[in-house]
Length: 258
Image 1 (cartoon, helix red, strand yellow):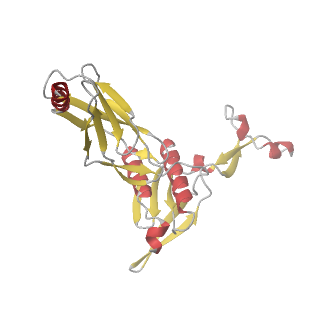
Image 2 (image 1 turned 180 degrees about the horizontal axis):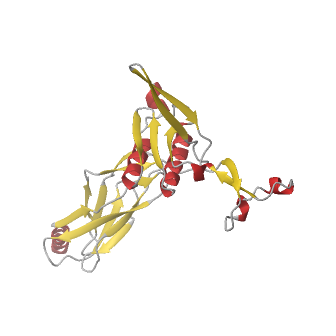
Image 3 (image 1 turned 90 degrees about the vertical axis):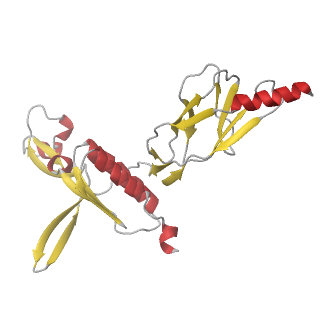
């Protein structure tokens, strides 16, 4: 009996005084796991034994030796769906010192992250807007683009250009060497527009996500127009983040029809 009481008291003292803080966590893409960093500190020395870490209701993912560990501890976080993800409760437990008792607690962090749609091909068509004025009204004309890699025009071939850009059909007709010019080489700005929410919404958002990343990689300036949100043309990391967050938070078909 005395051994059990000492073990119980030691288990509690070893567990008490631990301070846990979540580390910085970037937003993630649906279907892709991300490592969640957890910083563990103790207000008292002499901590020992293993501390087991798991998301509430799931299997233990990680275990750290309290008397010899390196911050941060990590757990994998996964979300199959886009949207706002509230960090689940974290379960901590320890069997120190003799394994007779399981000392545990659940921690709830006031922390959430945004889960972006999963990038998916094919790319979304790029649109172009021209604004004119007629009296007091502003009229916007939208012309649907053909995408980032569609054929645009023919120009004279210049030494050093890729051979796969040569228009071989025209060359075979004796028209000389001509080079294909694609829309991505002539356009430097555009709009990504989603007019309606329908049964293809999730696939459309995934394509829009992929196109945002592609246009950013090419240095394009682009705007995003989706139901409930319009983001003016811009470029750079912050602009792309705003666009991806907007895509992640679009209301689903069930939310709109209910």
